[in-house]
Amino acid sequence: MKNYIKFKKRYCLFFVLVIFILLFFLTGIFQNNFINNRDLERWDYNEEEIIVGAEGFTLEGKNNTCWYFVHGYTSTPDEMREVAESIHKEFGDTVFVTRLKGHGEIPGNILKLTLDDWFVQVSEEFDVLSKKCNKINLVGFSFGGTLITRLAETKKINNSYLLSPYLFSTYNF
Image (cartoon, rainbow, N blue to C red; front, top):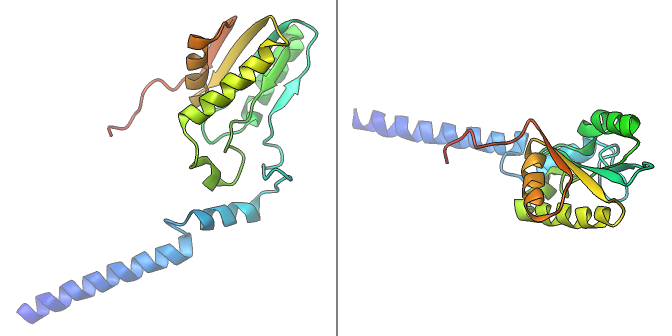
């Protein structure tokens, strides 16, 4: 009976090891480069290694009021295009939609960045925009709302709008 139990334990350990090896080589689990390579095969990238269509954009207006849009985590400015175009058409204001660093790029790039990195980015872009506009409205979607809320605490803004705001973690860490 003892030999049977030892055999069973060894067999289970061998089976788990085989499953792990298959997952490792077939799915790329625990391998950032494998995920990056799959995305490089799927998407078209420009010279800056940004997915074509994922770039930030500006809609130039006639007024001294600007709108600064910040998209959600792992998303791109394109998710905000329809709202940005509507605001531009309705008010004639300048609309700037940023692309947060690491977003719209190969997946491994986003892992190197933190909330502080993105806050520095939006703060610097806000400062550039404030030289052009007297009033700046902030619009943040989900995670972007976190960034614009923090920005509103430190900068002089006109209004801020939170779209599907990220309010608290749904997971217990």
